[in-house]
Each structure stands twice: as C-alpha cells, then as structure tokens.
Image 1: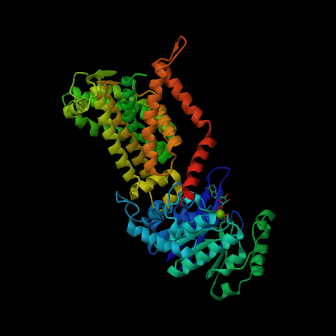
Image 2 (image 1 turned 45 degrees about the vertical axis):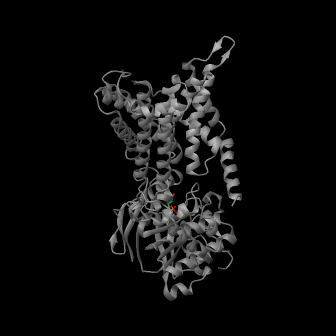
Image 3 (image 1 turned 60 degrees about the vertical axis):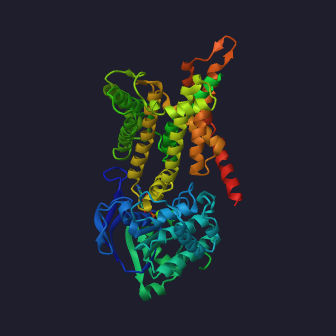
Length: 270
Length: 315
Ligand SMILES: Nc1ncnc2c1ncn2[C@@H]1O[C@H](COP(=O)(O)OP(=O)(O)O)[C@@H](O)[C@H]1O
Ligand SMILES: [Mg+2]
C-alpha cells in the first residue's frame, strides 16, 4: 500500500544548523495497517509524517502510495490520498468558518473546486449523519463557527473531516497530546471507531506508550531519524511498556534525560 | 452640510464601496495586506479615459478596467507567492510600477473628458424618473450617479457573497484563515491567493473607471490614499456590523464606505473659529482614524467575540 524507500531529510543543509532528521528510512505499510509510532522528542516522527504528506520534499528516497510514486507531487496534489490530524487542535479547521463550511471543504478534497455552492441541502444531510457518529451534538450546530468549539470538539471534527473521503492513509501526529486526559480518551475512542469503520491505513504518532500498545497492529520506535524497532504480529502483541522502556534504555547513551522525561507511561486505559 | 454635499458624499461612498469590497477581500478574507490599490484605482480610470476619448462605448471600458486591475493584482500576488517577496512589499512594488504604467497608458499625467459620452448619458429615463418624483432638477445629475452606483454596488455585493460561498470561495476564505489546513484539504493556496488579489484589484479598477466617468477626469494621482480610505470603510463596517457572516460583512463595508464619505463631507463643512479643514487635511485625518482603530486590537477582538458569543447563545 505504502512503500517508503531510502528516505532521507536534512534540514538547513550546508549550514551550522544542519540537522539530519530522517536517516535512510525504509518502510512497507500494508493496507489497513494501524501503525503507532513512538520515540523521544526530535526523533523525526513528525518529519516522517510531513514527508509522506508532502509538506516539504525529501533530500533523497521515494514514497509510493498505492502504486503511485508521490515523491514529486506537492502537498496539495497528494492531499486527495491523505487525511491528516495535527497536534494543535487549531490547525485542522478554519475557525472563522462554520462547521458545515469546514466539512464542505473536506468533502471537496481531491475534487475540482468551482463555482458551485459549497453547502447545499444534500451535503448538509450527509454532514449531519457523519457528525452524529461523534455523539457530541455537533449535528445540531452546523451553522456555528468552529472557533466556538472546544479543543476536543475541534479535534474530533478534524478527524471526521480527514476521513470523510476515506483517504488511502490517515496521518495522526500526537492528535490527543494537547487535550486534557478525559477529552484525549474520548478522541482516541472516536479515532478507533472511525479507523475500524473504514478499515483505514493509519500512522499514529504518540508520546504515550500505553496508548501506543493499546491500539493498532504494528509499533515503530524511532530514534535520531532511524527506525530502531519495528514490531508486528505476535512480536507486537507480546510487547509491554517495560519492554519498550528497555529499548529506550539501550539507546540511552545518546538520549538526554530531558527527552526521556517526555515519554509518558501513565495514562488511563483506553 | 448642504443636501447637495450629502448626496454627493453618499454617491461617493457607494462607488468607493467597490474599492472597499476589494480591500475587504485582501485584508480580511485573504489576510493579505495589499497596497496595490493606490495604483489600480487610477489604472482603471486611465483605461476608461483612454478608451472613451478614442470613442469606444463607455460600458466596454468597465470589463476592460476590471481585467487590467486583475492583471495588476496578479502581479502583486505572483511576486509574493512565487518569488517569495513579503506581501506588503510586493504590493508597494506593483503600486509604484503602476504610476509609470498609468502615465504610459494615458500618454500624460491626466485626461479630462468631461464632454465625452459616459455611461451616465445612457439613462435619461432614470433622470426623468428622478425629476418626476419631485426631486429638484439641480440634484438630478448627482441623484442619477447615486442611483447607478447603488445598483452596481448591490449587484457586486450579491455576486461577491455568492462567490464566497462556492467551493472556490470557501477555499479562498480558508486560505486567509488557516493556510496549512486548506492545503491539507488539497487546495493550491498560491492559486487562491492570486485569484483573490486579482479579483480585489479588479474591483478597485472598476471603481476607478466609474469614478473617472462620473468626474470626467482621470488623473494619475487620484489613487493616493485609496488604501487608507478602504481600510477605514472596512473598519467602520466591522464596528457596526461585526464580522458574523459574509453577507453582513460586505454590507458593513458598503455602509462603512458611505459613512466614511459622509463624515469627511461633514468635517469639511466644519468651522472652528478661523480654522477650516481643507481637503488636503483629509488624508491626515483618515490616517489618524485608521491608526486609532488599529491601536485597539483588543477592543476590536472584543467586538468580534462579543458578536460571536451573542450569535452562539442565540442558537
Ligand atoms: N521545519 C524544520 N526546520 C528545521 N528543522 C526541523 C524542522 N522540523 C523539524 N526539524 C528538526 O528535525 C528533527 C526532528 O523533528 P521532528 O520530526 O519534529 O521530531 P518529533 O519526533 O519530535 O516529531 C528535530 O531536530 C527538529 O528540530
Ligand atoms: Mg512531533
């Protein structure tokens, strides 16, 4: 489904700030795989997702999605294959526009945008039925501005918008990290429900090891731009938080205490 | 203030509302501070004056002026998006370049064409109607301009409102609100920015063409301070109407523009002892007004949030 070959990304190349963020990453992702990605701060998790989404081009290597080499495609040209939710709840929606307008823009992803009216009765019904899935009552607030919603509501909405056209891959970058624990858990539940419903191929970055083990069928650990652990099948099911911490210990020599601190192991079960 | 001055101010307010709608499109919808308008207003006027003095139908000048304005806006947006020049600077560059271009178009710094046929000569029936409802003949001309400008600005307002609710229009609004979000939804934001800035300057040039025909004069300096008047109109409109919906926002811009021109006419009629405000003081007054309004972003945001809240609770 997704093939990543020899991917490499260096920021600020040829300057004192030169920074190798992704170092020769190879990854094969099967259809309907749900991969959780963990790793310390600065390991390159977000960079990997941004490269897949085409936010910036890699220095070398290629990315193939469903048989199509997307490496030369700009971000907006590959958006039709990709659904994304960011860490910042403000990033995924347009605050000054209404819920139905935001939905309409997601509905048009990958289609020509012309001079047809953005929200009509038929679309409104569709949006309403999707919003009902969330169970947040948003289906009755279609004409409310998104800026009026809470962080959790916005994040749930972004998730729904990202999956509206059943993307070939869903990229979640610590999408619950900015929420309070209870809301975070709610959004995780919604994530599970939507991913299961559409059998979406998903890559989810998380800081939270418990969460990384509670969801998905494959786990990847990154460190300094490399994949240092890739567990699937029975290996993945045997993994425990302690085993993961052990792996972190192994690379600790090059880890600062500060980055270890950012790895959170205590969470409510989900 | 005389009735004549008031009618004149309203008529001016209506025609310059087209320009203010353009400013709304860049500053508010796209969040793209665009000063090109100081050059695209006389550009529209120059195009109209040259075509009319060459004997071309005055109605034809309007779409041509609009297209010329769009080209100017496109240049600004291109400099900003593709050549990565800061948007404000990009617009100043285009504005300065337009000074030379406008003189090239006219062949000299101004063209008076007061005796030529303009669009206002095509509606004797409106004039008759105006006189027949009892408006004195000396007001007939100014009332005619007022009526025509009112019709034009209302039509443009509704077209703009509709456009901003189409798929493309939504993408344009989102570009100004959250560029990375709309890019993730597959929109080429360079395109929406170019289209928006072009449309904005098209409106401004259309305004220039209408003003020139109304006054029978195109002058290369007539654009000086346009942007400040436009901003003042937008800000007055927001203070009165809030930014709730596109429909209200554009209505606010039009009303804001009329109020702005009325306020200026009023200021000009003032006499404080021996001191009389002269027309050349108006740019200073407008600039101070805009600075004053911009100095209080927290007040402005409170106005916005207040309106948002009221609307949210009303559900
Ligand atoms: N846009 C950027 N410009 C320069 N450096 C960046 C940029 N994005 C990330 N980096 C650097 O690349 C490295 C990996 O960052 P990132 O992928 O964000 O890590 P994380 O695993 O915490 O998501 C870090 O050292 C970071 O400073
Ligand atoms: Mg990150």
